[in-house]
Image (cartoon, rainbow, N blue to C red):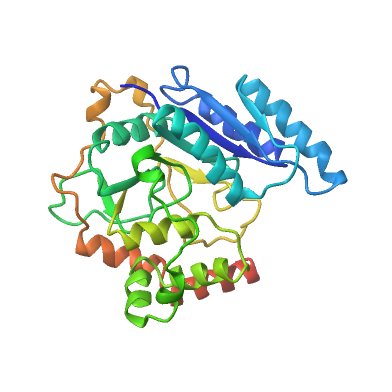
Length: 303
């Protein structure tokens, strides 16, 4: 198995970056992987100390640290950084500094990168998996979704280079009710998030990636048991301490270095590259308006 480079995006959270690095060192294939860390620049002078601390943590993880002199923002940083690396290596694994990978994450993402390298219908491999019940008779350890996740993912140059980051057809989409309903099948929040980006209310790169995925009828591949957690929603959450969150998951904590199975066979892939109606129904429920409102209320009330 050829390993893809690991690209990490950090900013002003040295402690979070340290936790990510500690977890990565426990991952199978870490020692065989190239690691590149991009650190965004400070927005103001008081922030400079934390950014410098993050740079020092990054240097303990790799000798390839690329620090920006000015603040670019997460979206522009990811688009530019991934483009630079993927143009050189052809494929890439991407992490942000608030993620906690499970021991098998790199093996999973590299397996998916190898398996679907010549399958242009698959636009990304995602390490994050929601709590989806495996349908009866479903033969596979992974499933396909019309919506990618930005919480630990990987892709290939021939897909990344085709993305229209300007969303040049937005005006026609904006007024097309049928298209908006279709896009929202990936989650009731999709069209409104894209509207927010185009209106300048957010700077999300991920919603533009998801829009391009939907517009071209592409799929992402996810594990039934998640191989990454977001510390903002996990047991040690700093941003989400209430007892309920629709994003809390159980990590797959198997040490795959000790599993007596060839690496390319660890996760069984479905025979067909297509979505499953029952899985799609469960995914829509996670992102439906009622669940999102319920989750937000519990966050506000911290219960």
